[in-house]
Length: 356
Image 1 (cartoon, rainbow, N blue to C red):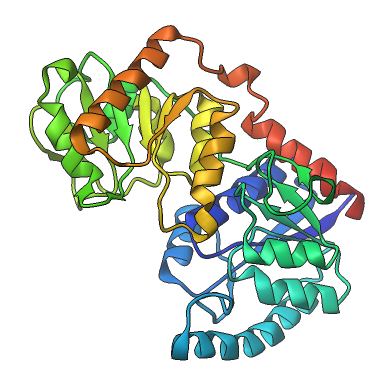
Image 2: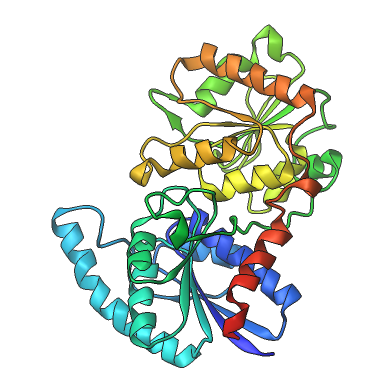
């Protein structure tokens, strides 16, 4: 069996990494299937694909016509016409057996083009609250694969739960990860807290970490904050600020606990790896989808949901509660997890394989 698979993903890493993860799984497990990619025109998209050694085809659009307002919205609406023409040309050129869309603004013109050209297609939704393109695709009768039990507001009979494809991380010893990250000295003893950055009201996560790191209950802890500097920096006695790290397995190899946003990909990664996590959904997410992701995640995984209110005292209290979960040693083990990275990709393949 041979065939061609076209994966469409752009906008943010939350859409792109699941597509890359599934494409890599195909390359390893189904080498007779050739995989190609389409993304949009935002610099971050190409940066992510390049970090993975992938050269995607790009559409000259950079945002959704269904969002925003004023002249910017009019420009984005206008851009859809050449993007649709280019999408149709790319599909004719690639001639894929199947088109799998991972949501985001770039999926819209490719969805319409694939329907026009009668190419089999499906949408994978990474969030528990479906995005606009997914809701539109469902209304057209296109198959929807959901990353979570819920795919609000789509009826359960109209989607199939698959899970979110994530990278098959090559977890290493904490000592090796510490060295490869360029962190100074030997690996410290004590709990390691991985903190993904973001804003919480008037205080940044970095500010909160700096406040609690000197508290007596966190003596002996190590706090690791990636993507907040150009170089490795030591801020205080036990806080390390890192640049953007594309080899995320280095970070996860160090982490005993994590503070994360509510993105579908990140939540699936910490689920697969069994890392107890404090989930702080980004309030500005479309349709509040990060909150819905967090609720769905916590229905199956051990962790804590926090709204970001209460400043450093509440932050410290929730971290100590998270530490109790770690000590309890009952968090879901990777090998027993229904969200096992390889199994998710295999289930996705089984759902589309009849098209090849």
